[in-house]
Length: 83
Image (cartoon, rainbow, N blue to C red):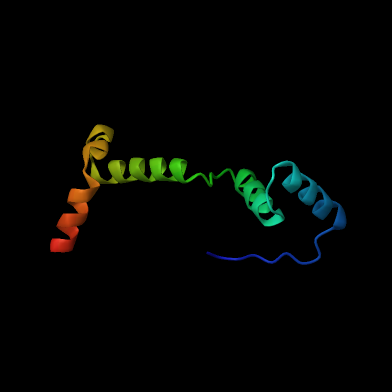
């Protein structure tokens, strides 16, 4: 996972971030990530990311949504190992 260091962060922004983190029961780093994700209009939820990825796979492979959900991951892994 990548890291980010912010220099010369204004004190008022840091104070607001710290208060929000405390209110959300998160660390300052976790709150910063959540706010960046929201500001960039992206989701950090694994479930949402997984759903979007499955939709993208279905679109690119020409499969319908129902076909993708019927695929058995165990069978796919087994076939992949046999290659």
